[in-house]
Structure formats: C-alpha cells, structure tokens
Image (cartoon, rainbow, N blue to C red; front, side, top):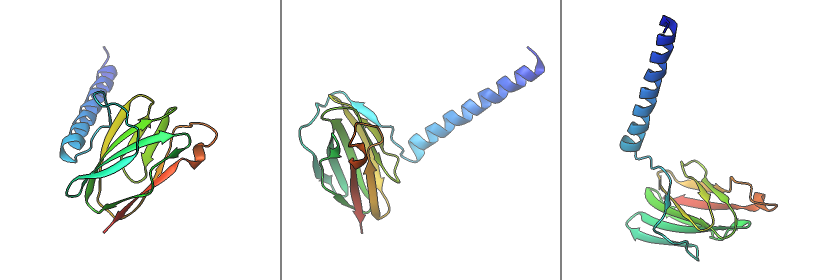
Length: 146
C-alpha cells in the first residue's frame, strides 16, 4: 500500500472514530433518544393524552387519511412527553417542528419517541410522508405554555 493510501485510510478511520464518539456523547450526555418501534404494544384505537407524573405526559396519536384526529395539545414548559404513534390506513409521517421527533406511522405497528419541551411556543406537527391527495392538510399543533 502506498503512503497516500495509508494516509487516506488513517484519516477515514479517525473520522469514523470521532463520529462514533459524538453519537455516544449525544446519546448519553444530552439525552437524545433514538425513535423506536414498540413490538409488545398493540396499535390503539383512540387518540389520547394523559399525565403520568408531574410534568410527564403520554400521547397516543393515530394518523389517518388525511389528518391527526387529536385537537391542539397543551403542555407546561419543561414537560417530557412520550409519544406513541400508529396509522389507521397507510404510511404517514410525524414531525414536530423545532424538536428531534421525526417518526413514521406504519399500519399495524407502534413507533415511539420522547421529547422534552424546554421553551414555550407553538410546535407545529406535519406529515412528512406523501400519503395521498389530502396530504397538505395533515397538520397539528402542540402548545407549550408557562
């Protein structure tokens, strides 16, 4: 192997190591959760939001053509929300603006993400997966208040 090839290989390995270390740091030091699929939970039949502890909430959302059936939701600043998402018909997307929540709603499965709302304001929810002719109307909102 030539010297330049060894140099490029070394740089590539170093960049990968730094990337891996940053992912570990984000996952452990900053509390960034990776969205997942919940295999032991059956898809639910109704949108619900309920409080599980002080400043801790659980939100069950069903994406349907072409809307999220839930009304605007309101949480206090500093709340942690566990979001469980499923679809009643086709594949949909679920993105909460200004957060790291970006889920896919797949029929027959439940996906999960956790988010902490640190600043007050309105957080729009949009479907980011083209789901048919009424896709542009598939929006929702979360309000975070003092």
